[in-house]
Length: 205
Image 1 (cartoon, helix red, strand yellow):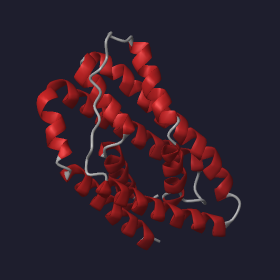
Image 2 (cartoon, helix red, strand yellow):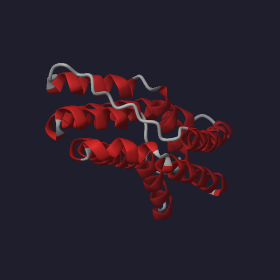
Image 3 (cartoon, rainbow, N blue to C red):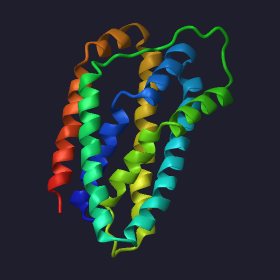
C-alpha cells in the first residue's frame, strides 16, 4: 500500500481507539477503582481481544480477495457505510459514561484481564470493523501477510496506547473525568471525524 493510504488507516485506527466505547469505559472504570497497575491487566485483555478479532477477519478477507472483484468492491462500500454509521452513532451518544463504583473487593489481575477480553471478543462491531476496513487498504496483487501484519500491528499498538491512556485518566482524574466527558464534546468531535473518513474512503481509488 502507499504511504498516503497507510496514513489514512493510521488516522482511522487512532480515532477508533480513542472514541468512547465499552472497552475504554471499562478501562477508565478499572483505573478509577483499582489504580493504574491493576487496570493494565484489563488493557492487555482488551488488546488480546483486538488481536483475535483481527486474526478472524484476516481469514475472511483472504478468502474474499481471491474470489471476486465485485465482492471486494461491495465490502469496500459496506465499510464506507459502516464508518458513517459509527460517526452518526457516536455523535448521537451525547458522551454518556457509566463508570462503575460499586466494587466491594479488589479483583485479581486475571479477573480484570478476563473481563476485558470477554467484553472485547463478544462485541461483533470489532469483527465487522476489521472485515470492512482491511480490504480498502490491501493490495490484492501484493503479498498479503506483510500487509495484514502492518495493519493489525498498527491497530494493536493504538489499542494498547489509547486504552492505557483512558485507564490512567480514570486513575489520575477521578473527580474531573466524568463531568468533563459528560458534556458531550468528545462524541461530537469523534463522530465528525468518522464521517469525514467515510467520505475520504468513498473517494479513494
